[in-house]
Image (cartoon, rainbow, N blue to C red; front, side, top):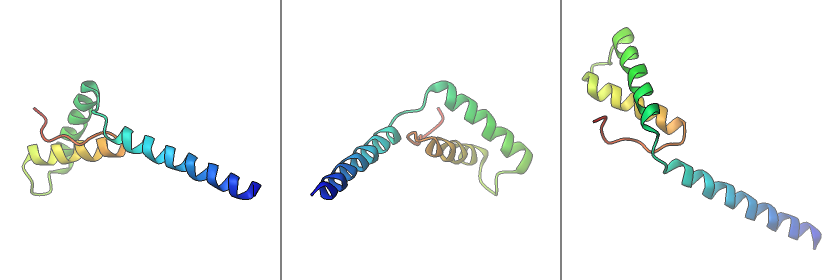
Amino acid sequence: MKGLRFIGLGLVGLSAMALSVIAAASEEAPAELVAELTQFCKEIAAEEGTKGKSEDVFVLECVNDELEAEGYQKLKSLN
């Protein structure tokens, strides 16, 4: 019985962690971070090219990739 109770508590803990990760992924990124990532992605576009995309599209995709990796919501535009 102790073993089942331990497994049950473990599952509850994992569920709580999963919910906190999902909640964190829905947070909007701070404006300062978006500005920094935008500048970073513009530098990449200038140095490495945009892979045939317009600079605006490339930078938005780049920023969104970085935001997603940090657990933030993606942006619809950079304006």
